[in-house]
Length: 381
Image (tube, rainbow, N blue to C red; front, top):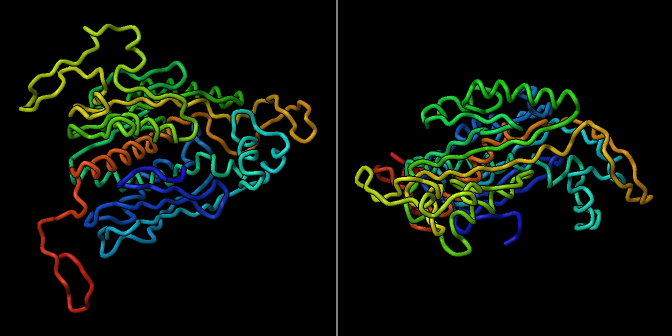
C-alpha cells in the first residue's frame, strides 16, 4: 500500500498539497447505512480551521467540505467516500526564495532530493500541516461510526504547553470545557498561563512545543491484531503521521522507567459486571489488545519550525552558509489546532480495527425495513 493510505478495512487515503487546488480524502470500507452529511463533518473542520485566534496561523480559509461520492439519500452506500476542501487563501510568494535556502526544521531540501525537484514546494506542499484537513474529514466519519455503533467517545485536549501543564480533571470537565477556549485546554487557569507563554513567544518571533492527551471511552476489549498490527502500534504509526509529532506515550508512558512491576501492573477486577483492569497504567492496551478500560495516549508536538527569528541555513546553490528569515502566516504552537486532528486519527485507527474484528458490521441496520419506491431509488422508510 502506498504511503498516502492507512488502514486495512476502513482505509483512508489522503491527497492534496498546502497551496494546491484542494486537500481531500477518500475513505474505502466505511459500512453502508451510516447517516452522513456535510453537516456531520463541518463542525470538526471548523475546530481545525486557521485564522481563529492569535495563538494560530492567520491564514484565512473557509474550509467548507464537499462530499463528492459514497453518500446517497443521507446514508453511506458502502462505496468510497470522497471529500474535498478547496484552498482559497493561498499566498506562495514567500516560498520561492526558499528554494535555494531551505528552512531549518522543514522537509524542504529532503523532499527536493527525494522527488528530484518535481515536488510542490509551495507552503511545504505535501509536507505541510495543511494536509491534516483531510485527516479531520475522515476522522469525523470515523467518530460518528464509532459513536452510533459502539458508543465509543474520543476526547482530546491540550495537556501542556512549554512548562505549563493542566491539572488532572474528571472526564465530565474535560468533555465540557476542552473547546471552551482557544488553547483547547479544559483547565481555564492553566489555559490563561499557556496563552501568555504562546503570545510572548510569538511576540519575540519564536514558537513553543505542546502536548495533547487523548482519552477514548467505551472501547470494547480485544481490538488489535498482534504483532505488527497491534492496536498501540497502529495508533502510534498513525499519530506519528501527523506533521510535527515527535513522541507518543500510552498510559504511564515513559514514567514506567522509574516504576516497578508491583506498582505498574494493572490487576483485574469486576467492575459493573465486566472483567477489566482496576488500574490503568497500561493506558487501555495490553499485549496490543484493548482491555476495555479507557485508552490514554499522549502526543508530543515540536515547536513549529517556521519562526520569524533569523536562522542559519545552507544555500544549496552556492553551498555557502546564509541567514534566513521565514516570513508568512504560521502557528506559534501546534497543540491547540491539533486537538481535532489527534481525535480524528485515533478514531480512524479504532474504526479500522473495529471493522476488522467484526464488531462493526459491513451494513448498519436501523431496525427499519429497506423499501424500494416506484422510482427505483433505494431509501429508508
